[in-house]
Image (cartoon, rainbow, N blue to C red; front, side):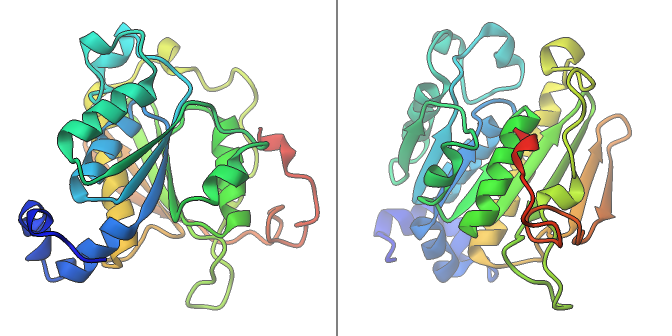
Amino acid sequence: MALSSEEIERYARHIVLREVGGPGQARLKAARVLVVGAGGLGAPLIQYLAAAGIGTLGVADDDTVSLSNLQRQVIHGTPDLGRPKVESAADAVARLNPHVTFVAHPFRLTPDNAADLIAEYDLVADGSDNFATRYAVSDACFHARRPLVTAALGQFDGSLTTIRAHETGADGRPNPTYRCLFPNPPPPGSVPACAEAGVLGALAGLMGSLMALEVIRAVTGFGEPLVGRLLMVDARSLRFETLRYSWDDANPLNGETSGDDTSTGG
């Protein structure tokens, strides 16, 4: 996909990078990426994907902007209070980069609607804040054969990984699914919500930016994706660690029990 003279100037600092160059920037322009959630993780993620020149950026979120969001959800501002987050995000993207096509999906993804929506995109980045959505999205990505970049936030910690479960690794074994990493959701009430536990605002910015980096690497093809690796960030000590995980032949998507029901995730 050809770049205009204005786009060449806009993305000049990408184009001079050997790992990206003109072909990589063209791939970014041609890409269709779905972001799930326009909150703490989605806010920086959306902004950096728009700045990078993702051609079509879909955002799914059913929430409205509240005052308590603004400590970390930097894509929204005080004048946006009460507005749907997808509308506020659309305005921010338009201000940042008019070359990006923004598609608003003002609803929550569920097992009933995730498959149809995800089929419209090349890659999905999930920054949702609940396990029901994460399982619905990851299962749908597996069946649609779409890569998934997924992250989560705690009070002072975050995690990030890439799921390409529709592909095989260098050893010929299937890549792990999200259910290989987290076979079952935690019991209801065992993980406190953000409103109850709190979250460090700048940590959301860090993890959302790392998600954007992982998406950009996936689209342009440079670097080693976080497939089978869970990046964990501890904001208290500013420590980064990586945990390796592998395909579980008992997982219900592509394991020996792949005929079992997967509805327990949401």
